[in-house]
Image (cartoon, rainbow, N blue to C red; front, side, top):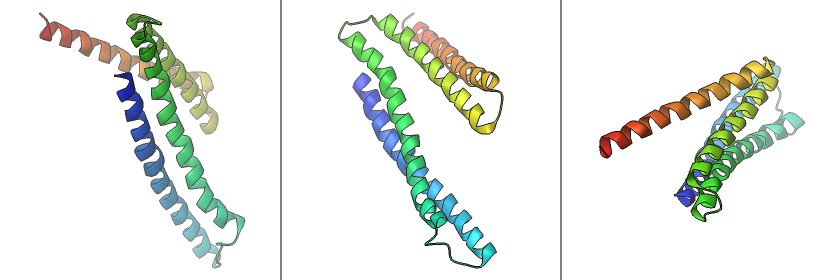
Length: 150
């Protein structure tokens, strides 16, 4: 199961994280670049801005794909440890939930820093959404078990 999660993370990280982000970011940068060229009536292809327009989509796509690959891999690693009896499955579940909330706290703080919002409030908001997702999944799991195994 853990290897499937890691494989899925790699595939999703490449396709959605890199390719999808690259294509949308590139389109956005090109549109913006052409608007600026039209506004000033001059070609900027050989300028630094023209070079940045080519480089930035690659950079943004790499950063996006890294997160989509690394975070699921880190979380799945806990279940690999459980598979090899280094930790219990219950401990893997607990550590995965704790790590997920910590990652969400960090992402929330990072988003607040970028947008100039309150860091603590943003971090807690994003973590609360993650905690809500964990609670919903736990409820669905327990209901599924009760239905399938009365």
